[in-house]
Length: 179
Image 1 (tube, rainbow, N blue to C red):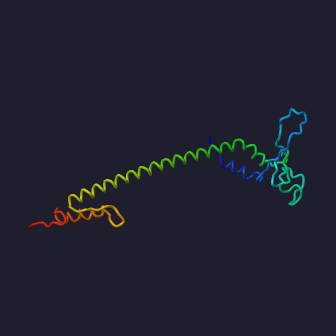
Image 2 (image 1 turned 45 degrees about the vertical axis):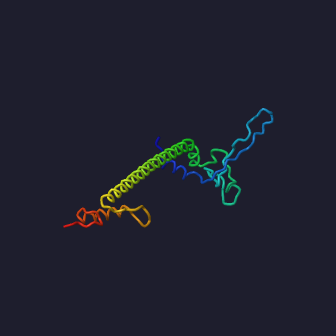
Image 3 (image 1 turned 30 degrees about the horizontal axis):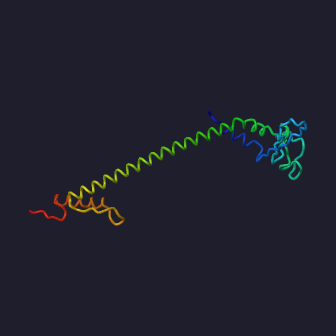
């Protein structure tokens, strides 16, 4: 389903400004059988919107503000009537689009969550490998790398021990090579 958002926006912009109010009345049937209850009888609009403009409407008079009831179709402008008529298809289309966008956001969030978990897993594996490498370098060089802390970095220590080891021609650090 394609939605013409520009057409919906144009109808909304052209219709009488809101908010609108629904006016209801109660059935006054006295036969004891009637179950009509409340029913809508008019839309109360915030401004005078008679399409024909056959009666004057000036701010403050009885037809201005929410005192104007649109009880008959001629009481509405063509633009407001078009807006009302299209609401039955526009609202479901907009709700469907909102649902589609929400589903797309949820799918994106799920993908980001999977990617984040994968990154964390890869980081954990890399840290484990770096710990094992530091331990192996420690065994080869005879240097204790120590534990991770805010004052000690075993990986940095391993790099330094490996560099020192290479500089000494493969003699464990702390031992001297005989010539």
